[in-house]
Image (cartoon, rainbow, N blue to C red):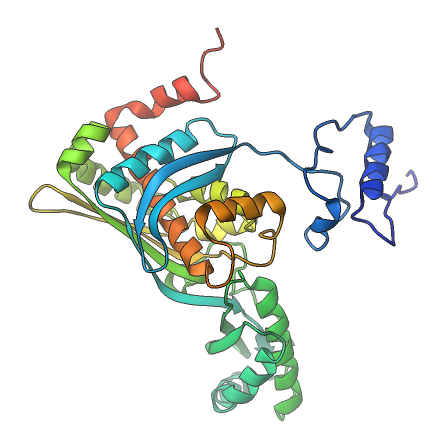
Length: 393
C-alpha cells in the first residue's frame, strides 16, 4: 500500500488561476499529461465557486444552432433558435429539420400543466396504527409544517404532502413550487426544517430519514410519470399531410402506422418513453443552458400520443411529466450558459416556465425528424453523410 496523495487545494482561494495551475501541474507529475485545452477558460475561474470543486479547467463541448422553431405557448412565444451542445453528428441538423416541419405547420402549442418539486422523507413508528394516526396529524398541522419549511426560502412554497403507508412507516412527498430555480437543494433544506419542526412538535417525536427514496431524485420512476416532478409540460402540433409529404417524403398514414408499431415495442421493452428519443435534445439543451445534466434521467421519460385526422392531417403530442429546469441558480449563472439562455430569452425572473416549454417543443421537433427518417430510410444515410461514421476519404 502506498500513502494516499491528496489533490492539492488552496484553503484561502481554491477557485483561482493559481489553484488551477497547481492542480494541473500536480496532475502532470502524476500522469504525464499536459492539459493544453482544459485550461482555455474565457472567464474568471472564481465564477465557478459553488459549482465545482478541485477545478482544473473547462470541457469545451461544441454548440450548434437549430431552428427556427416556432412556438405558440403560454410562456414561450415566437421563432426560437435553439443552442444545442453535443458531440453527436446529425443531431443539430435533425432537430432543425423537425423544427422546419413544426414552423411550416404553424408552430407547436406548449402548456405547463403542473409544477412541483419534491423531497420525500419517511417517518418511522412502532406500529402501523401510529403511522396512520401520524398521517392525520400531518393533515391537521399542515400550516405549522408549511411555515417551518417556507421560513428557509424566499421562493419555495409547500403546497401538498402526499402520504404512502408501508408497515410501520409513513412515506411522504413534500411538494413545493420553487419559482425560477430547479429547486432540489431548496426543497431539501426546507423539508429538513419542516421535519425538525415535526419531530419537536409531535408527541412521539418520530424518527425520520430526509429521503425515503420515493422522490426518485435523478432516477426515472412510475411515481414521477404519474405525479410529476419539476414541471409537467405538453407540446402538440397538427402537421398537414402536404407539409409532411413535401419536407419529409412521408405520408401521414404511414407515420401513424409506424407510431402504433413503435408504441407496442416500447410497451414490450418497458421503456420510460414511447417516442423516438427525448433524451438527445434534452441533454444537448441542458448542457448548453447550465441545467443539471443528471436530471436527463428523469426528464426524458414521457408519453407520445398521436391522432390520424379524418382529413389526413397528423396530430402529434409529447407529454413530459418531469421537466426539471431553472433560469437561476446552479450552472445558469456561468458566462457561456448565460449566453445560451440569452439566445432563448430565458434570463431573468419568471422565465423557468418558458424554458420548460422550449424543452418540450425541442423534444417534439427531434421526434418528428427521427420518426420520419426511420420511415423514409434517411436514418442511416444521414449519419453516413454528417455523423462520425462518415467516410474519411
